[in-house]
Structures are given as C-alpha cells and as structure tokens.
Length: 343
Image (cartoon, rainbow, N blue to C red; front, side, top):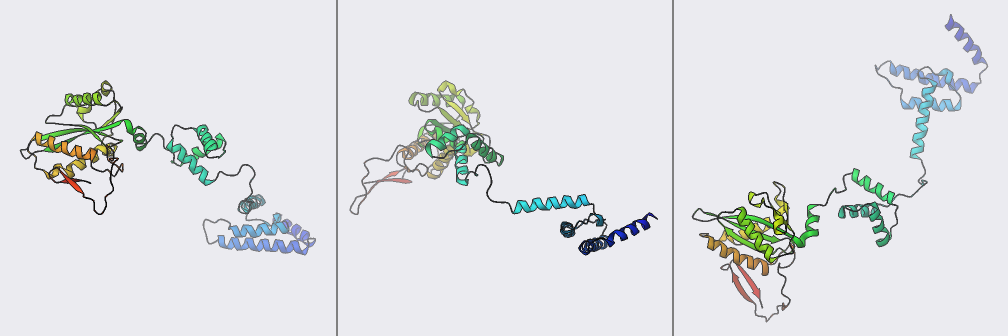
C-alpha cells in the first residue's frame, strides 16, 4: 500500500517537472541500471569511477538526489570532493608562496662539508658558506638539509679510517711481524715499523722468538731516536698487549679480520717478499738480516713509491736530466735483483 502511494505521489510531482529535469533523472536511472546489471554477475562489486563521474556531471546540471538508489547523496558528494582535490593537485600553479627551495648544488656542498668535517654543526657550515663561498642560508635551513641527508643514510657518523690516517699521517707508525722459514726448517720473525706519511721503514729487527720484551726493546730504540710519532697501528697479537704510553705512544689496534686497517704494513710485507725474500734460499738469521738490511736501504732511499709519488727519504735535488750523450751508470742491489740508475 505504501509503495502504491509513493508511486502515485511521484507520478503527480513528475507532471510539474520540466523536461530537462526529467531527461537528467532518466539518464541517471539508466546509468544505475547498467551498474546493477554488472553487479549481478559479481560477488564483490565496487561502483566504477566512470559511473560516479557520470552521476556527478548530471547532478551538477540538475540535482538528482531523489533518483539515487545505488549510493547515497553524501557518498556522491564525498567522491566529488576527492576528485576536485585531485584536479587541484595536478593543475596547481608552479609559483608557491614562501621561501624558494635550496638549489641542488648547494645541498651537495652542505653534504660534502658535513662528511668532510663531522665535528661541524649547522652554524659552522653556515659561516663557512657565507664568508668563504658567498652563500647565505639560515641555520635552521641547513639543519633541515642535514637531517634529510641523515634520514637517507648519507651522513657519516664519525671520522672515517682514511680521514684519521690523512689527518694524523705525520705522527703515525704501523708495525707488524713477518715470518721467514729457512731450508733447515727454522722460522724467524722480522719486526718492522713503517711511517704512514713517508712510507719509510724507521726500524726493523730479526728474532727467532718474538716476545713482549723483544717488542719493548724496539719501542725503546724508536723512542730514543724519534719524538714525532704519537700513534702506533698494530694487530691483536699477544706481543702487542703492552702499555704503549710508557713509550710516548697511543696504540691503535686494528679490528679482527680487518687487515686493510694496517694496509701500509701489509703492503710492505708483500713488497719485501716478492722483491727480495722469495728469490733467496734462506739458511740463517744473519742472512735474513743482511737481505732485509739491503732491501730496506733500497726501499727507503732509492725505490720509487707509487702511493706517495716519490721516494720515502725524498728525491735527490741535484738530478740531471738524461740526454742523448749522457753516460747512464747502474748499481746492482741484492745480487742483481734490482738496479739503481744514475748519471
């Protein structure tokens, strides 16, 4: 009975509606019928965006709130608001109020300064940019840029190992043991100390039984001869478990299984093996000492080093460039394994 009364009342109201309103309501009803037919073939169904868009267009021309039955008017309005905000996002103006963004190259300069100088804060970086590079930025802006880089994992937390070596190279020694086996099945050990800055071998000694007392004796000799060295890089061997402060040194033990932290000492071990020891039949401790002594003299004063692009004790200042008629002389080293050339 209620349905019949509702039908009759809607029929009488439709008589007084304009033709445009009736057409728009008819289109809306047809569109909803199409959606209902699609819905009957699917268990889970969501109203397609295109159908919502058609209903929104019709509703903007003539209100069709009374003709909606597959969704509520509030749901249609909600979708219309989301759609309008999306259009505003894609077609927004490029001109934004407020401060302009910091250029990419300036942000990269800030990142470089922070990583090169991990002790610097945003105020120090601001002054460095302003007074030396002519770039004026607020301290808070620099702090935000640093925080963004930190979230991306681009900021170094502490001084890197390579930075430590570069900053303290003048005062760093590196040390290690090198073992040598003889044909008589005896093993000897060479303890050496190398300057990180110049690559000079400042001291070496050969022993059959390495011990803490042996290491102490060599440290005393170094303390008596040199005062410039303040740090000593070494591995975690038992012979180095000493109080290095007694010898005016701060020890820097490397991390286990990280030989690259003592790369300068490891490189000398490789050099002396491949350029001297591996080419001799070793018999005695005295022979080892003579070979190492000759090689260290050659290594320090004659042999060029690619890493420092020089010679540890310096290039002789009185070098005469060779000419076509120059007489080039040579001096054999280690029985002819190497030669030193000069005019």
